[in-house]
Image (cartoon, rainbow, N blue to C red):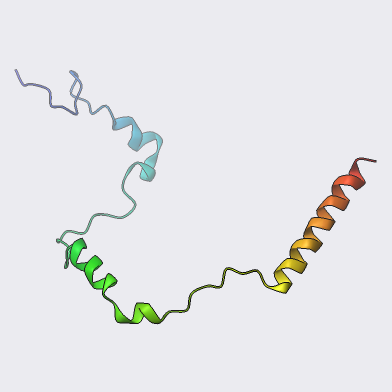
Amino acid sequence: MEEPSERETPHGVDPDAWKAVVMGQASRDLVAPHPEPAEAPEDELEREALTDPAARFREEHDPQPTLWRVVVLVVVAVAALSVVFGLTR
């Protein structure tokens, strides 16, 4: 008599067999794994990215709010408050 495998019940049915019927294609991986190993290991890719000389010259985003951002924020806040207090009357 055969021993049931780890993924099978004593009746010989995979416990996750219902997923293919109920969930259809969503039960499978959307993208099949690549059949070949990676061309470069993750450590090598990370090391190359950190030593990239062009990365130093990218412009950083200025976190300071500009005048237009402040004006738009105040207008939106006043409009929201006018709607809220207009509905409470």
